[in-house]
Image 1: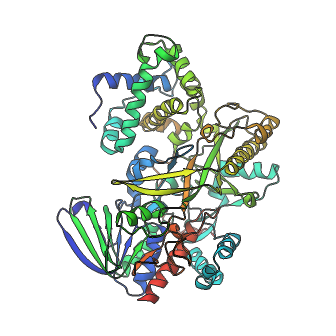
Image 2: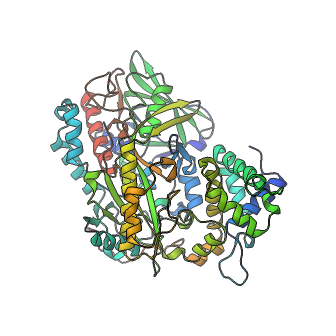
Image 3: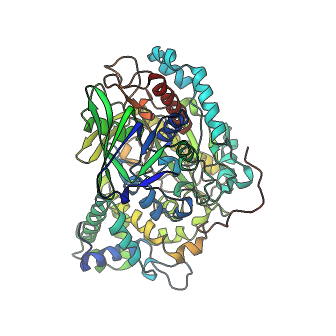
Length: 142
Length: 498
């Protein structure tokens, strides 16, 4: 599958920025505060084609759904932040399973991307770098 | 470890062994070890790469792309579609599971024997018990150490106590676990006794050879006898491995039947009768940090409703998976992320009655599965109990994660009402399929089963199936120990037949 076009990248990034918005003065970054280039390079290199296809389909659909969902002749990126929020909430609450899955697909990738950023991982401090083996013998678990 | 890396195999490679084992997960590793210890020349062929524990990635995305089949995006189609999580690495799913170790329940074995008494004649409960004892000893299986268990597991115990449901620390195959919460990304310190840290090195010490990054494409059959496999190495080379004695299939209840059908071995109900344990989770926010990415990944379980086909476990996840489950979006999601360390997630595994089937589709595999109406009632009960336990343990708010019902629940009465008023439409739930069974099931009747009670294929001599495909049904508990015990028995049967 070909890589994202410039327009698709813009659409995708607008969706991700709306998923986890940036807020001034807060330590936890938003999507717009992070460099996601390395993540998307890895997705292109390692993600299975079906997953990349599903993500691209979701980005296209959600970008052009504002006309149907909000009655606005605008792309998703052209909406104000409150309208973006409203549109995503409406799609998430849709009775259509497929529509709900569009948002879910982008959300899954958004979470993978966001929590891969070193700034975010440092904030939550998981055991990314466990201490080396202790030299003293330990009691075996029962 | 005698590992031949398939990425280095750029040209044709031919070799001969006594036994070729397809798959290096719990079944393949256990069968290979049993066979190699008896002096057989064994090759183990694994589609995934060999990865040293120090190279297991910390973050969820990298782990899934490096260690999981299809990055965890394989889907079982049906209502609803369910992702299927399977390891694709030397050691198979044992590398990326929660190390939960259950013995095969006697009541499940009795069900199998009632349906086909010949199984008891060939297997015998006593021998299965012996094999399970050996597995527990080999893999240092024991209850989770409370000093490394962590808050998530302790809260589940509290919630179960409040509801008066039987619970206990999970028995796990770990050695001196330090509670890093990294089981699902592969233990970076090699403390989990996954197959890459236990049976496979032992098999290699006895002369077994592992072909990693090498995908078996066909089982060779001549004159109704399995004679070897043909595989494709990641480096581009064609690999042909001859098997003088046997080919042992241990590639999972999805890949094993698909490969058999692809090889023209489609006698009997191969690929049919797929069963699984669909899993559902519920999240709750507490007043204090829980940090579900720390402590034993899955260290406590509630077993009080096992007779209803329900088992509950604490779930530890890396950050992205923990966040995905919060279900909110935009500004609200942002708010919830700032309290991510206070969210707890517990899951239920269902012993579903539903069944499905596996079929090859080109180079991929198509899997279908459907829940029954009875499964939906069970699922609804699972969500209700999970929510009630979370609230009883002190959660401020619970998110059942079920479309068409309350997004947030703060009181026990509302949660209890889910048991009667919760949706029964499968598409309202977010499920994941774990533990797959039955697609090459064992039995005495060749019309109703694929392998006999000796694990041998009914029609093709020298072809054995060692993985959970042979289980006549799902078992309602985590199957790793049972799979290993059965694979050992399979190895013994291969030796006896040769």
